[in-house]
Image (cartoon, rainbow, N blue to C red):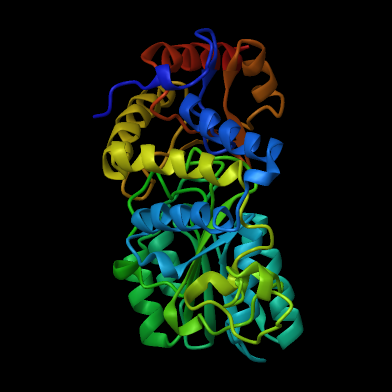
Length: 379
């Protein structure tokens, strides 16, 4: 169990922030790293050509440790939607085939596939909400011969439902279906291994469970797709990019690996150092220990909420770091605002109260949430 790390964050004592799945707060060392990077722009004459590459390489190396893959398999992207669009552009699907998504899937992992289906004459196949909360079984039942692409998360964002991606990956390979993943709601709080899952593409934005800044993300690209088509063409993808004097010697050659899929202006001197510092802290804590720590917190919260008529799937059907509380009665739409007035912060997503603590939360935070929730539902 990881002891409370609130000292690393700028969270006032009277704020109970249980909303990491919305947006994580930045750690003080992350802010310091980002600020130092931003200040580089104050002296642009000191920004040598080499510095356009060193920060990117450091980010790739840190991200690769989280995913358990080679650094050359990582592209730098600005968002989950960018990575999903890259996957949709490169994965084949034909008329009469289908693309598998979940019910209530996050829009950034839906719209690109909807368009791809419209363009190709394929269809979207939606996995219905499982009555027993077993998303893995529901996906496996839906993986039939016409599925060309399974576009999935590791954690369903309105239920906290956990998908066993190792089993799903095996099923996809048997069918010859591609596997494209949005890991934004899990990477950094739930262990993940590329060699175990073997996805074709996997993306994660850093501003949630990676405790990093907004507008930075990582994209894993399997080696079989690394000669594919990037979303944009920019100078830094090309094999002569490090020689600024030769940039006018246009070349058809990209850098090897996933770098061809990097976004333009990937060498963000403020955001990349911040993202790297955050990932290094996660690695120091160890993602498995983060998961176990948050799981213990959420189990206690689930027990308390159950006394008020709420329910949540049990682990392993639910990801440990993610608690989505439901009950028969409708959840008041104004509930988040009511809690926020008492400086308790959660989200309502779909028909769930989404409670997502992290290592900065104290026992008092959890007690305040339960007390405020009890008052709100009994009013």
